[in-house]
Amino acid sequence: MSIRETILMPDYALVFLNYPPSSRFYTERDLECVYFSAKSAQPRLSAPPLQVDQTELHGQIVRCPLMPRGRTVSISVKPIGRIATNPSSNHRWDSLVYEALIDRDNTTIVFLKGLNLRPERLAEPSRFECVYGWDFKRPKMLLTSDVVSVAQEIVRCRTPLSFLIGLNMKKVKDSVKVSVRVKGRRIFPSVARPGLRLEPKRKAPKRHQICVCTMLRNQARFLKEWVMYHTRIGVKRWFVYDNNSDDDIGTVIESLQSNNYNITRHVWPWIKAQEAGFAHCALRARSVCKWVGFIDVDEFFHLKLDQSLKDVIRRHSGPNNVGEIRTPCYSFGPSGLKKLPRQGVMVGYTCRLAARERHKSIVSPDALNSTLINVVHHFHLKQGFVAVSVDRTVMVINHYKYQVWEVFKEKFYRRVATFVSDWKEEQNVGSKDRAPGLGTKAVEPPDWSNRFCEVRDSNLRNWVLNKFADRRTHLLPWQPEYELQKRQRRKRRRGRGYL
Image (cartoon, rainbow, N blue to C red; front, side, top):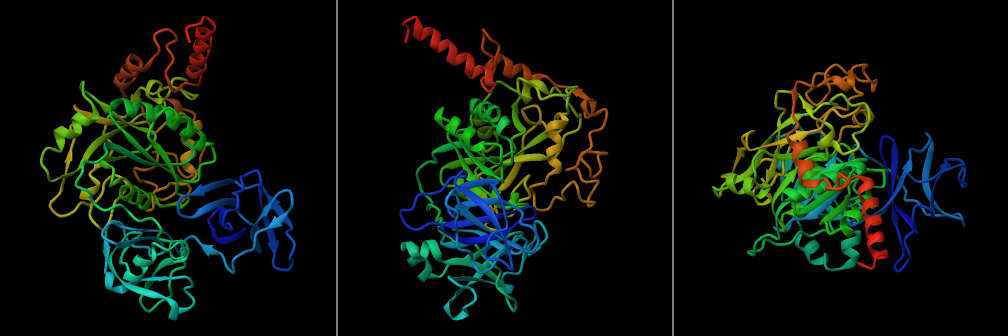
């Protein structure tokens, strides 16, 4: 086992492991993060890993606590203490090509940090070029290609034919990296191997009418409610981009999968990269999903009439040129609660602000502009496609934004969107993304539980209790007690000979 790459994040290190063929993968219990000083060949400090993940494109990634200044990190295998060999250098996160894939038109889509471009603006592609190779320090061994478009953190390149042919060879697929060079300057460091090739466009109908993409961190306790509810109103497929959770989200997703929910977890360790993650998800979903909703786990589509989400989409996408359906959002407050509501957010939070807050979108992936520009709330569309808005009497999003303090304070950790300032920073303190009057410190105001309450709204709560609650126990299927009651009931029936 060796270390392929190491990326230094603000408060942890990502260590990418490389295993010999047919070698078994180590688990979190097998590995330890070890730290060396420049003057010693022996590790002086050690710590358990924060997380170990097996990924589709990057292999196994170990998330280690941030190393002390002046030390390098490696990985040790317990109990024998074998230490993985290290690469020659570490990468800084703020200047890095981190993901890449081959689109169905054979262009390469590259995701990178460090261009520092303005949101929703195009850059001049002739200023850039894409670079392919094993070692970017050996210019004679590199392939270069023209850039088609540059916007935000996404560069689209013409893929060299020799590389496309070589993708069928494992050595090329697993080893060749792609990067970007601003002409006249150095090549960006890269960990991106464009091994994922998207399916070509098919004439057959899409497998799923409605899918959902989300990006989350430490939302395991809310995920079942969110998935079960939206499945009931028509969502068929789920793409969960996990942004460094450490709350056992994988176990919750496996539980949902075992109950026939079509949900997959995709490790997305990149910070301040939600827009890029949504673009990546849109491309991944495009071959199987006709429409994709981009919402957070604290946001719930609330249908006002006796209809399904599919009915709303059909009614608003009648013209063939509709590429995006925008739904107004309304923000709910703690509703007088000081502890997490036992029956879930939809039943527990019933008081909201009167004014609407922005919108969230359901998009047709085939209608997206090739630049993939998005600002979380909406995407840019191809020429000829338009966005339409849903009236609030038909459907809204209940955004349980201001929950009990125990939950809300987590928003101070780090905002996931690229162009949104972290709340601990003295920047854009008047932004609508922030909670009014809170400042930059996660200190609970005395009246928090009664804030953000202007309109009593129990409509979704009543619908949920009517459609989901068990008639005998009044439990909801996402409550932990529900599964316990279900197992006990089956055990009693088995004892009576009914099963």
